[in-house]
Amino acid sequence: MPPKLLSPVFPCLIFLTLLLLSLYSSLLSQPPPAVPPPNRPLCNLFKGHWVIDPTSKPLYDHTCPFHRNAWNCLKNQRENMGLINSWKWEPESCALPRIDPARFLGLMRNKNIGFIGDSLNENFLVSFLCVLRVADMGARKWKKKGAWKGAFFPKFNVTVGYHRAVLLAKYQWQPKQSTVDDQDGLKGIYRVDVEIPADDWVNISDFYHVLVYNTGHWWGYDKFPKETPLVFYRGGQPIFPPIGMLDGFKVVLENMVSYIQKQVPVRTLKFWRLQSPRHFFGGEWNQNGSCVFSEPLQEFQLDLWFDPRNKGVNKEARQLNHLIEDALQGTGIRLLDLTHLSELRADAHPAIWLGKKDAVAIWGQDCMHWCLPGVPDTWVDVLSELIRGSLETG
Image 1 (tube, rainbow, N blue to C red):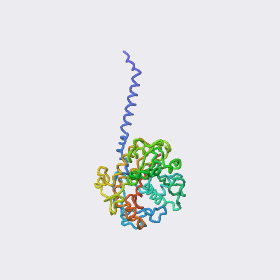
Image 2 (image 1 turned 90 degrees about the vertical axis):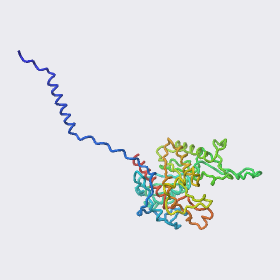
Image 3 (image 1 turned 60 degrees about the vertical axis):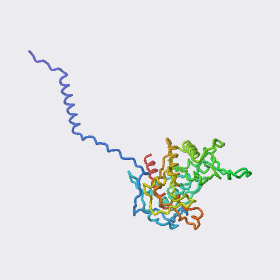
Image 4 (image 1 turned 30 degrees about the vertical axis):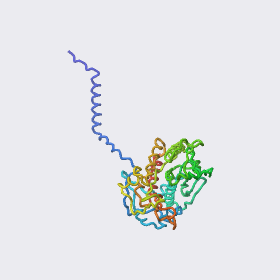
């Protein structure tokens, strides 16, 4: 009997088997896939602690032409300025590099930065100007309509300006119309139009590429006592029933945030600086409050000083911060949370070193603003790092 012919399928099976064995052998010879590294923690520049760094030196001195005299603590010979500027802020999960003024101005070439708010943003601005001047000694003072002050850096075509708008919303003094009955002690009111931005910053958004907002320190009964209160208007009419200071703050926040969202270009980097804490000890600014301290507070002391539940003289910072955080939810405005790192630095205010002989007798100690050079220089490091990260990553 002749042998059976092999099925034509059989050679195909052999070929496929050899091919699969070859592929399998090739896979075995490959190195195992790399295990992806664990996720690195996000860098939170706002959480950390202060450490002594003997090598830390300010980038500028008392000769900076942008100084404001009351904050020029070197010129006014405030005690311990060397120690005050030896403290370095260290975030918990990453490093905070000191600003490189030349590199930063190079990154910002042909762009402008604006600060809008009260004198604490001016304090911030002066620090920024003095730091940046290190890279452009030809920097000159700058001012245009609506701006309070600023500087132009010609080597880089960069302008940094400040627009003073203490409530952000428009407000104006209206004296009492009648003097027939003065028993209530009312001298007049400050009318606040909650939906109308102050004239100082209403038409500036196209000029700036970075904007830093703040408000808070004027929202108190020391600024607007019952004899000259804030009265809130909407649509040209008083809000009825009348609302108090804190509710007025909330309504203004909501309206100003809405205005920024609608009117400021999306491409503009927008920051809202949370409160710069005060450090009055033993009383308010007009009640012999003092801040002549030689070192920062300890972490465990902070709630005693700042927790609103303790009803101390410095409680407003955290109270207002909560309202600001709520108002910014879901917006394109980034929180610049410099409160915690500043809460610790009770040692770094001008206090009694104000540059004028009778300043303390008239105004009390300054436990609100900051010595320069000083803590606001760290604010500059934080802000510049956030701006750099945003611009370099698009």
